[in-house]
Each structure stands twice: as structure tokens, then as C-alpha cells.
Image 1: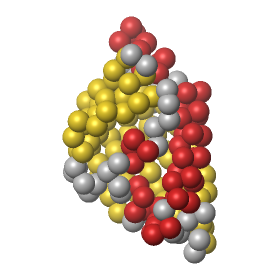
Image 2 (image 1 turned 180 degrees about the horizontal axis):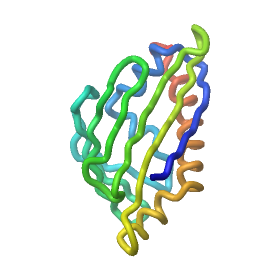
Image 3 (image 1 turned 90 degrees about the horizontal axis):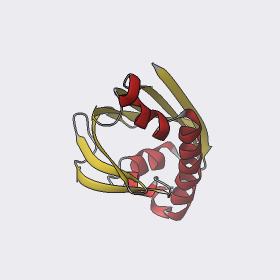
Length: 152
């Protein structure tokens, strides 16, 4: 099982970060080109809720069903119920650093299918690609939280 961790700090209070991440439009806001997201179904974020979407890597569609758990003010977990990998569990954790700053820790445990079935996911979800994706998400998160005065 592979593990990927990414941590960064945003200039926003914990309540604003939690509210931002509980917004059902977040996936589209935090997915940078060249990846595009098509949402098929997204229930309000709560334990047991589901999100069904397609990630478009150029012309290649990757269908995904995520189930949410451990939803609260300090984060949540999404687990792939159906998708391109053998397993994927992503914990989003929020910790107040000060009244005006919050640390966001992204922890992912994932496993590729064996042999040729895993070749596709190994290409799309390799560690360098995850690092670039989450670096972009860091900047997008900071930008969006700065733009919404009602959340900060």
C-alpha cells in the first residue's frame, strides 16, 4: 500500500476552511487543468454521503464513486467505492494553527491493481503527479479562501 502526504497552511480560520471543504462544488474548484471534473451525483457532505464523478485526463475518462466518512469540523475521509485503483482512501484533516491560520493535511493510502490492470492508474496517479496536483490544490485553496470574505 502506497502512502502520500501533503501539508500546507492557509490564512483562514478553521471554521472557514471546514465550510469551504464542505461545499459540494469543491472538487471542481480544486481540480486544475489539464484535468477536468464532470459531476454526475453529489450528496451534501456527511458521513455515508456519496459523490459520483468523472475525471477527464484529456480525452481519457476515469469514472469514480467516493463514499465519505468521519465528517466533522476537523476534516473528513473519502474512500473510493468504485474507480481506477484497487483502493484509495483520502483523509482531509484541518488543524487550527492560530485564530487566523489553519493547517491542511492531505493523507492518501492507495493501491494499484496488479499487472496490466494497474498500468493505467500507475500512469495517472504516480507520486510526481500527486505532488503536482496537491501543489496546485494548495494554491487554489489559498486563492478561493481569500476571495470569499464571508468565510474568513
